[in-house]
Image 1 (cartoon, rainbow, N blue to C red):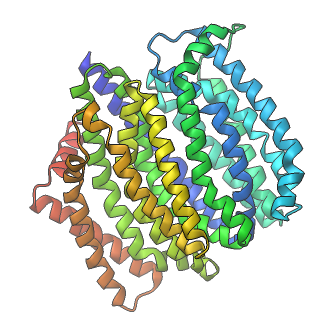
Image 2 (cartoon, rainbow, N blue to C red):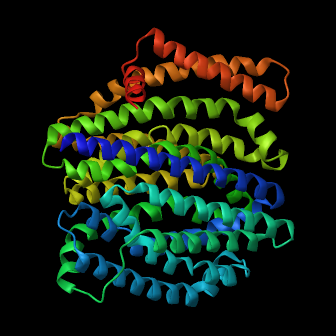
Image 3 (cartoon, rainbow, N blue to C red):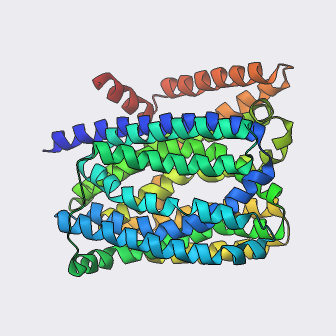
Length: 477
């Protein structure tokens, strides 16, 4: 049984990594082309709108979806009840956003927000429609289907967005791109996922799922509001262009995190659920996730800090140079995500959503205090505040697992410290290469090659535990 589960986990992780890298890779190329064609202001306006859509999506896709994955004995009554509830919520929230669009536009003094918000809010229905298909995929570890739907969606919508941008559609090229992406994902999942909603709705089932899911819903709402609060503030008190720089600086490190850490965590949660009654096994899975993710993510984040300037000049042109300081700060902040997510996934998997909610409340209170303090010092200070909040949050997220899993935060730090030290050494070495007068492309390639050689060479010389584990895992393939 354990061997069968391990095979499913490895296979799921491979497909999830393929989905993340394939989708994000295509999206990365698309965004580079669009960033050259569009202005920072266009991206700033879209960023403001996506805040409200993200908040609405929390009610539709958070809480109940995770509760369905966590529940052992799900059936059609559970799936269908949540499906119809999600569609109903999407309808209510769309009407609210439609009515409130002029008020939001007046608040930001941007009349163009009205129509764009009303059109983009249609994605709420699409998200509600495929939310159960995604749950079904996670429950059955069939992430191959998610790979195909996501890849088809991002490729076709990316082509559409670029064509429209060339034709002078401006910000609307981004709007139609996102609509097309969500629509295609829905269509493909409808074809390849066998589950179909039945004419079943049970308030009793919804009530039981709500007991667990409500805490996660509240936590997700807090987290989404908090994560987007800085964009709300920057969009209101500063210019859309400044928000565009801030969000563009966030894009590059977020892309890497979504690929590697996001794939691992997507597979890890249902795996932890399957082992939730064996706390020793849960600890082993969490530890392996933290160590492996950190070994991959630390050098990527530190390397990106070093090559950020030639990279932005090469890919986005000089008009985006103001995003570089934010990019560097976000790299340092995202480097901690393996510790954040692994600890929180474990807490949810063993059914302690009450602790999860308490942690979110504590972190958000601290984060709000830091945001208020940093607000008067400018956008750069706000970004520094996000980094400080992230560091404090890693301590807070890790604290409960000292009791729940006997996995103390200091033990977690000890586990990731070798990767951090090796990544820092690599970063210093490739930073020295910047003194060579080379073209941006040659310099970036030179730094990447040297960085990879130094990191893997040190790992091999020191016989780093995670390095050996990854090699053995690859050889078994």
